[in-house]
Length: 204
Image (cartoon, rainbow, N blue to C red; front, top):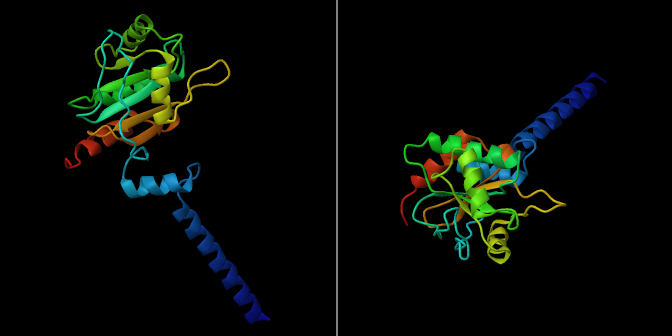
């Protein structure tokens, strides 16, 4: 009888250790397994995105009425609307803190998720209120031009029924999407770190 009890205890102990090991390798609780594994393997603070080529900002202009072209440097792209009172100012301040930490701040673009409410005037006021005037370009334009951007980045725009996607993306020097941050996972330190990591990549 004693031998059977000892074997049973040993069996349960092995099962516990295997379960614990599996849990550790599955990744961080609260993250999808694939995302956690990608983050651990890559060393990035954000999540790796599919390397989708740049979507030209055709049909959009910034708060000064000027067109823009992506590529040439690691770039931050985020999605905002100017009447937002919580998540958008928070996103803007996280980005501002990140670029404050960088000796050579990267280009930063906000793309409107509200083509009706966002105008050059409201965009300029938003940037001024967030101390980002001249440091972030706020791209506005007609719905058809904005929809092209939402589609390629997988963004849900702002509607009466649904809150827009809270997503910030880092592009590499060629304009490809590389790293993504939902708002609840983004920190200034993590954003700045991933920018520097991408900048350190050898040129193709």
